[in-house]
Image (cartoon, rainbow, N blue to C red; front, side):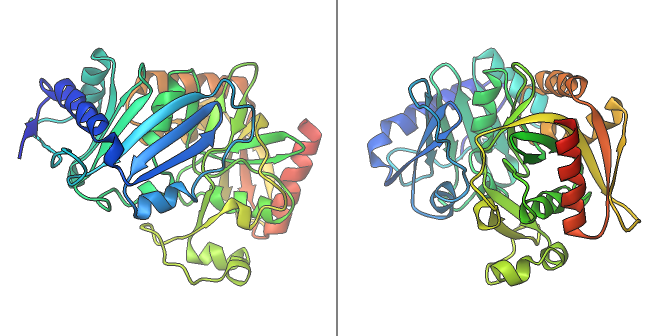
Length: 348
């Protein structure tokens, strides 16, 4: 099996682009997803990823006249002349060196060693290729936010960013919720949705800093661990027939619990960092921009391959534009939602 090194990396990317495009007519499935300012068409095989592409997105309903056309080939051996994925051949691998080498060639990319899983993107041609060992040989997190890396690279080229954060809003105004796993971010989003608030997504949302801060929806997937699933009343509402995901969490979609259609965007007025409080009621207190940056930026940058420096600049600008707060969560979902609704009505 061939091995790729830093020296041969750009050539390997170009080889995969040529092989995928040469096999374009042989991919059995073609799916188009409409996202903000973008129409993404994926060519792939039937299977879990094809199913995810049909379920995991909140499609945009805005004017498509200026939407850019993104084309991604999701392939594996057996489709045309697509090869077996290569192994990484250099002894020392760094994400920074990998990204820099590709950027010098005008490309973007990501490699997941455990599965010999490759992703490459050409921003000038709006074309991507993902090569796997088989139709199901992808990282376990991929179905929840499929093709996330390609969306990151495309939107980053336009000055926007995918943020690892949740959102809640009221009448078009909203807050961004950031924090490490287990802090209560996802539970707060679900509590808000169940009690009348809006959201444009949890986990990953599209942030634009042009003319203020706005958040737009991309992915529809929500997640809760079994304890939170039961506490929020989702066990009765949605049932528990589906399997748990790779993190041991229930997955479901925002449309299943949202009281109304997902808005096209939210104007973001504040950044909040939730944590599980010890009191009977929730509270909102100012926090430093430094601490808010620490809560927001690291996961957003680590989970979006490449462009590390631009990511820190983007999130630094974001925290300068927004007032930052610590949200201490009480135990009652309705009270949490009420606290946030009162805050949104007051600041908006």
